[in-house]
Image (tube, rainbow over all chains, first blue to last red; front, top):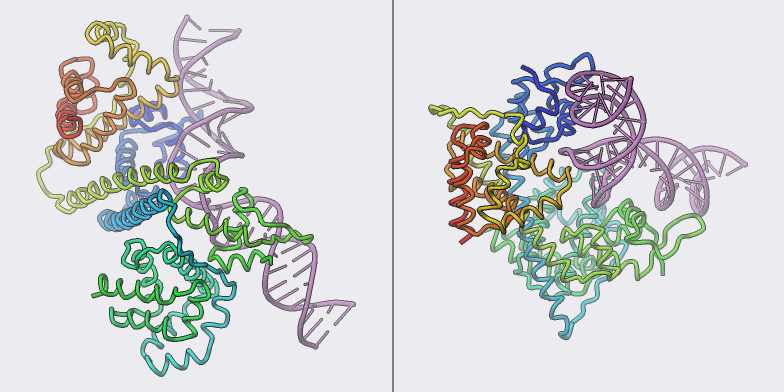
Length: 254
Length: 254
DNA sequence: GCTTGCGCTTTCCGCTGCGTCAACTTCTAC
DNA sequence: GTAGAAGTTGACGCAGCGGAAAGCGCAAGC
């Protein structure tokens, strides 16, 4: 018993275009192809299609589905990993919804006396920063193991990685300056979400505990070479960042 | 004071590729272009870019951002609508996460005595269904206003619309059959999510209240012409669908 | 004067999962 | 014999860029 492509389409609720696509990418080849070039499917293909659709509903990618069905990987492991992705995405959306809510509120009561903080965007934020021998030597003296850890991490990065990393840090500093300019308290969920990102980014080089993370925030304020970079973007940003980091350390790292 | 593309990139934390893309799509044209073809940006462009990045973080599409910035539409309205989209997506993810969790559990304890329900995929589910004059006449007699409402909705549908609708209904029936085969109770969130979809789909033709929706479910069981379609897919599916609809009506429609 | 190198340019392919023509061939029915 | 349904293979399009290729302009060092 074999079915044509249109019959399978009707049976399964997908379009024939989709079936052809699945054939193209090798996800679901037909049982055989007639002399006229037509695709014919049999029972086994219908079962496979059913599996495919099941996993597709879970938002798994076709490539992953194929890997699973060809039993190259463990189903449960894939599902677990996928669930983690979904949860992360869900958390992201949650933060976004809150941020949007606040933005709407701000726009609606757009009449108050603004204490405008000016945000600059200097173009030489990181110029000659990490190759500074002074800072390097100082860190090596004061925290030898952190220096070693971060040295290894830095050595593993390519120039492109460094560039990407700098861009990400720059973008985050500007986002934070915007929160500060809007008068958002450092305890706000959106600011704390930024701190989570910041913490992750720091962890690329060095994994601080709560106290160390707070100490790092204080260093941003105390050390003029760090502070300068922050305050070049907006006055008081270093202090704002330190306070936000302290809250993050207290609520998430301890 | 003008900056080159690379300077702006460093200042804002985006790549020069992105800036070129924004120029391409008309979102952020440079202030002027030098004789050598190079893009040069000024203060106004930096401010616009800042606005763009703000809204981009909220996951707004570039097209919408452009519309807002060119003040063709109201910011607050766009944000409200966008928030609704995000909330809907969040609910979808929530359902998915639960479904995946259940799937994982099922896969892990894959040893119990299965009460296998066979799922068929007949290829002629809707053959000559809606043009049946008997059903049509009967509906017109029993519920004249619903008949009128759905007649208008059906008239507004193109042949393609009908095809899409049938495919969606077919796919949903099969998904439901899978839940039934897995022994999922009709009160389960995933099943109820399917009922929400079903209810929406019914609402294309006719907007039932709780009692009417329950009555529709009963009709699926009582009327052999409906019941046949369900049971062609899997035995007992009509009853399962009716029960799920009753739960939905009780919890969501009253 | 020539090379090297950086920064910039344009152009095009790639990703995801198909929808949607378009142009053609083949099967089926009257 | 011819119409119409159903099949085929391309190819473009969608969002938002990343990345590679190929070329131009300009400055420094030989």
